[in-house]
Length: 116
Image (cartoon, rainbow, N blue to C red; front, side, top):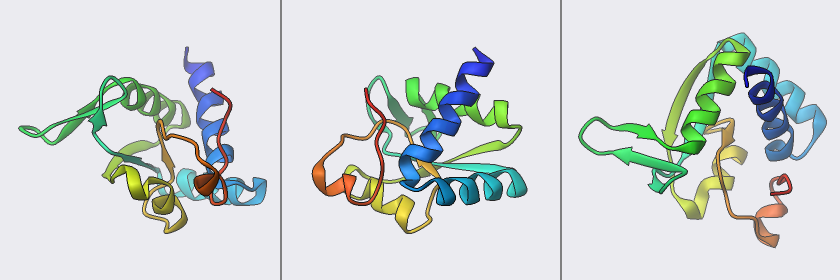
């Protein structure tokens, strides 16, 4: 499982950055800073749900990216975002990756998407 999530983390970095050079640079920064910043909406059950009482997240995306961060040996930091600007947040360097995001032609201009 750990090996698989490392591969998923690397694939997510490449897919969401769009260019191999940008992904390598982003991965280097993540490893150098020791933090993987994850953009998440917290409103998409069962992928990502935010508990308002504790301001913590749970769900499949949260579990997968927490495990990927552990495999990389870095801390995971969740950054609240919304569905409309989730891809633009990567472009604006607000976070490094996201979990699930719906692919569209407009979003594909800014970010790569893996095949489901």
